[in-house]
Amino acid sequence: MHCFLRLVAVMIAISHAAAAERNFDFGKFKPDETPAEWRPFVVGGGVPGEWKIVQDEVTPLLAPLSANAPKVTRQAVVAQLSTDTTDERFPILMFDGESYGDFKLTTKFKLVSGAREQIAGLAFRIQDERNFYVVRLSALNKNIRFYKFVQGLRGQPVGPDIKIERGVWHELTVECEANRIQILLDGNKAMPMLSDGSFIAGKFGFFTKSDSVAYFSDVRITYKPLVSLAESLVADAMKNYPRLLGLRIFGTTPANPELRVLASNNASELSQAATLTERSVFRDNQAYYGKEKDRALVTMPLHDRNGEVIGVAKFALTTFKGETERNAAGRVRPIVTEMEQKVAASRSLAE
Image: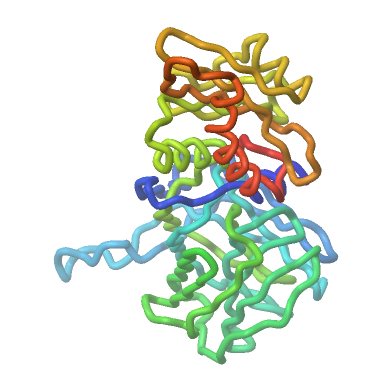
């Protein structure tokens, strides 16, 4: 999870990424099994949740075309079935695939039963099992609440009283843009716009409490794909410095400790292994100057806030007669300074 925290800390949602959409189909999974790519965990005490695929009648997403059309359809949904009554027990089923920064996430949920609690909702911008946001609804207490978990401790809840019927499907929507969070219930604003910048990106999952039995279905998300720090550094430099002919950033990842191209203005160069030059710059913390036809090549180490080398930037520049290594290094040094300011709080370029 610590690697994931570093991963999320450097992921940046940028506007030049086109919006994407994903729908989650639980019908492809076997009944009585936890869906693949989803991982359960529990916050607080008690046993983990019992998350399984079950069949239930759900209101169709689209209105029936005629009065005689069925008003519900039977389909596969995700159910939390454990009835452990431990009070401060929060079973979560997290989608363990992509992370999301700016997004609109919608799911249907139904509160089925619970003697101690009847609570269901969404956890989002999950950093790890101890740090995330939550919006949840209670049929017993008749309210909606938003709060965040920080290091496993639940923060002060906010939100109004609101009637939530048990045994009825409701639609819950969470919209996040930067530090702004909007929550809708059945298509209507459930509370005023929230503002919190603690978590800028993360994963999402279904949330329940104590012995709440709840169903979830029809999950869809529209989002701006996250771009790695290395990719955003290349994009910004190529945009802001038009005299650059090319830029590659080399680095490592937890899964691949070998130095390779993490980002480039030329997509065909991605994942290429570093040459002896880049490996030497990374190892020795020394810049390198070279020439290739009509261009100068300057390879510079990139440092974190502690001065440690975390990557290598290789610049291709237009050159001129009489240009020296010192001239070329001076031309790229301001770009490197800007880059290092952006990586000052991180030790990863890859995610």
